[in-house]
Length: 278
Image (tube, rainbow, N blue to C red; front, side, top):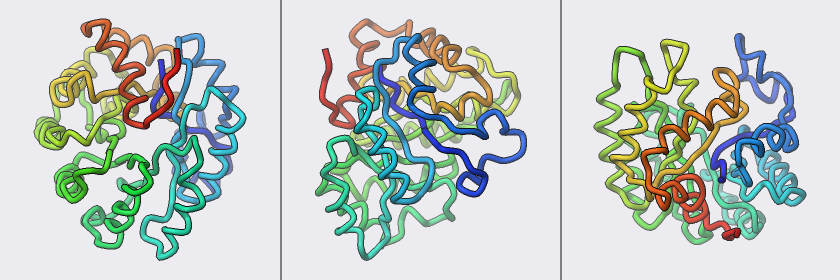
């Protein structure tokens, strides 16, 4: 099993200002051994480490961690996609064997960001490197993301956290479902089933509350374009690692053995072009 989405950080309040009031549980450092200790007992044999800061120092640091750990199968870092120096930056980083993708925190940007011409030239440059682009956004940005993806039909995209639907006990986000199905028509987009417990707006979360979102993800993307992720340590705000794995295994119990293998390992290996393991 591969965890397609988690983070590491050496915590400081100035470097991680988004970790605010009520988030004390994750307001300290999380490093590789911390994750190994909780993930391996749940059957996780490798992970994709995703950027949590938009700096090249962050990308370099994650790659240094990956060089020292077989457990870290790949890194989704950050590069300045709108910079005039992007080409030289990509020349510096793109050939690192464990850099498998890049991400910009689009959820923090204003409407229209994904259609910005300079940003899109940066995405064009990614195609030549073979790097994946991870999409992090809120549901209201899905329509714009569809236009964006259509500008890059050959680029591989992975959507993080199902675009963060707002999950309520007594209300299903039908607008999100409509737009997710539309985005999923693009065969160059895969999705991570991750980060959902922190999107539940009527806590505590439950398997029953999340099941409609699992069903929609499977309906829209099929078992061939969906992958397991934890969003650890952010998930710790609402669930322990093993609790999340157990919940997802319950959802995945409806899959065939071949589809189960795709969801928990093969789809991630394929999307990020990881070397397969026995």
